[in-house]
Length: 171
Image (cartoon, rainbow, N blue to C red; front, side, top):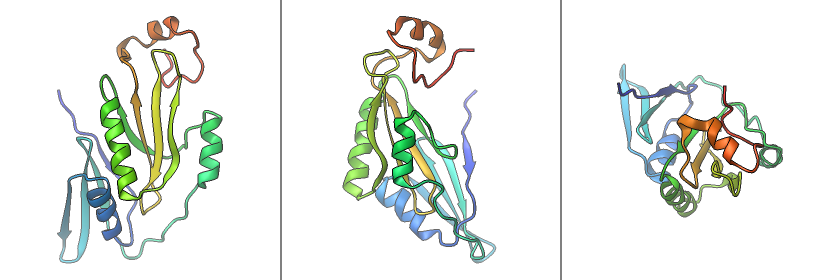
């Protein structure tokens, strides 16, 4: 059974900057609809899944929970921001990951955490980066740099020389 992941984020005061970010900068398919005469909703095809934003002119804009420096420090300490969403490319997704880096850089989007590789030399070697949209939502893009069997994580870990900083913990 195929399923589409749908994530509705908090309301926004002005939906146009989000449309420009996801459609024009990240080159994602977007659909902007008007409901009840003046309420705008934005639907983003986020790597085959659905992000939804609703405009609410009375919404209070929130400030970022973490500064870029705090995110850098936390990442060095293997800490993932508690509130974020993203995509994790598996199998041969590293080429897609590199293409997204080119898109981010050519669009002038600033990194919260620059592209980084962790678990170097192991079968779970991964590359990742964090960016932020105009509503301060933190987005993580992550990819395996090698072939990795996500259905057999425990065996992958036993075959690696190190088990630290593992994204998935075997149950």
